Structures are given as structure tokens and as C-alpha cells.
Length: 278
Ligand code: AMP
Ligand code: MN
Ligand code: MN
Ligand code: MN
Image 1 (cartoon, helix red, strand yellow):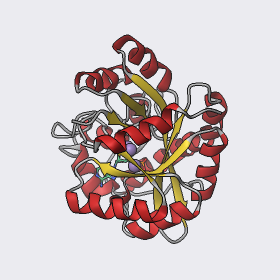
Image 2 (cartoon, rainbow, N blue to C red; image 1 turned 120 degrees about the vertical axis):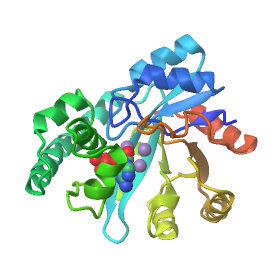
Image 3 (cartoon, rainbow, N blue to C red; image 1 turned 180 degrees about the horizontal axis):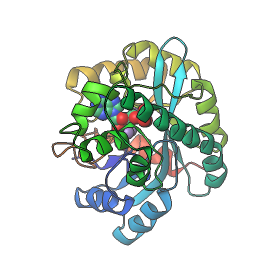
């Protein structure tokens, strides 16, 4: 059982559970240290940390930032921060990307309407309820309106990256996202490297840009993927991180703090995160 989970989503982005709920689940699963990493926002961190204090579980401030590389496409970078990091400044810097998410959601709804899937943008906004808005909110609105049976069907038929209703986002560059994280005294890690089409090139580009960690222990990745990742991490001097990427969107999803990570690796990243300062 993992003691660490550094990739968790809540209702502050496209997760379905509150930060408090996520923290309680992680605590129930024996976690010692977790990070809340909502997309493009740190707004849920305070709630998560308050619940963490009540449960005796250490909660690190985190974020997942989408970036675009001209050759490799969309990559995701995780940032982890100390408690005295200037989170308000960071949150302000991320505002532009959240605003962009709103206009993109509006354009996605228009595209869906053209495809005969009638949806009101306001329904999506209500459902997102102030969160950093994303495609899963649109998918849930499509389920609620009876257009599809499940969030997954909405992605498979319309919203996936090469789907008919996909609208790209304007994203930061890889270097800019790493710079933003490090400037705030944070630690950067490349999220889910196995999910990228050109995975090993993405890892190399991340290391070249000054990135520090790599999410080798990810969700359901198998031993072979983990071994490959570990080899690359060692070659490039990247520190392994662990994450379930919990969203609470599917009943069979991995629960918070259930991804296994070897004890020595858990100790290494825990020590690093505890020694972060601004
Ligand atoms: P966005 O940030 O709006 O581009 O939406 C991306 C989010 O949608 C990811 O963080 C996942 O939660 C979810 N997602 C992306 N692709 C898929 C897919 N093919 N199937 C199911 N969920 C997906
Ligand atoms: Mn997501
Ligand atoms: Mn991601
Ligand atoms: Mn994620």
C-alpha cells in the first residue's frame, strides 16, 4: 500500500469529490503525505490542508499544469509547493489559463451543437460550480442531458483529443511552466509519462527544460512500464513520484493513495517535499 499520493483531483477542477473527501479517503487508505493537484488551480489546497490537520495527514500544495510542446503536443506538469510558497501569486498567474478554459468550453459546446448534441453552456457552468472548467464537466452535462450514457462515451464519441468536438487550449510552454513552479520554490514532476505518444522524448524534453521529477508510479501502469521509467529516470537524474490521478469519475477508478511505490522512493520524495522552501 502506498503511503504517498501526489496526484489527486477535487471539485476545484474536474474531480467529483471535495478536497476534504479526498483527504479522508487517502487517510483511510493509510497515506502519510499527499498532494492535491487540480488542473490550473490551487484553490482547493486550503480546504485539503485543513482536513489534513484534522486527520493527521500531511497535505502538500500542488497543481497540474497543461503545457504545449511544438513537437510533442500536450504534456502535463505537476508542481508541489511548501506551505510558505506565494500561492496567491501563482493562483493569479494561472487565472489566464482558467479564463481560457471557459472560452474553450463555450467553443466546445458550440461545436457539439453543430454536431447535433444540443447543450446549454450555462448547464456546464452550473455543473462546474466555480471549478477550473474542463472537458469532464462537458461530458457530465452530456450525460445529464441524455446524449450519452457515460462520461467515457462522451469522450470516446466526441471529446477525445482527436474527437469531432475537440477544441485545443492555449497552453504554456514546457519551459515556462517549469520556470513558474521553480520560481515559487516548488518541485516539478512530469505527469503520467506513459500516456504520451512520444513518451521517452517527452521525458527527455522535460529533463532538458530543467524538470526535476517523473511520475513513474502512475495509476495502473504495469511492471514493465515502471521499469522503463525507472531506467530513464536514473539516466536523466529525475526523481520518481507517485500518483493515482484520482478524479472520482468512474466507479472502478483507483482510490486515493493506493498506488504502490517502493519505500526508498517514497522516502526520497517525501524528504524533498518536506524540505521545500521559497
Ligand atoms: P481538459 O483539461 O479540459 O483538456 O480535459 C482533460 C481531462 O479530461 C483529463 O484531465 C481527464 O480527466 C479527462 N480525459 C481526457 N481524455 C480522456 C479520455 N480519452 N477519456 C476519458 N477522460 C479523458
Ligand atoms: Mn482531469
Ligand atoms: Mn493529466
Ligand atoms: Mn491529473
